[in-house]
Image (cartoon, rainbow, N blue to C red; front, side, top):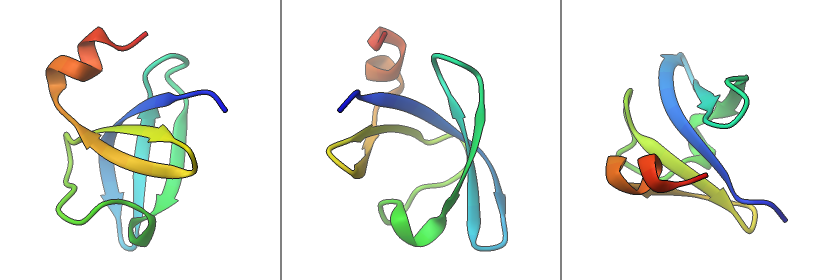
Length: 63
């Protein structure tokens, strides 16, 4: 499974709108599926069917 990197760009009710770093596509994800404490501007890595908060530096280094 491919690792995908996202930035949380908006929150609309119970949904987060994530921007895919590679394609720029927006993805709607239920907030309940994201790690506790995420907020607008958070950087996330999706790998092995789960999301992980990462640093901006790690996000910048990701392909």
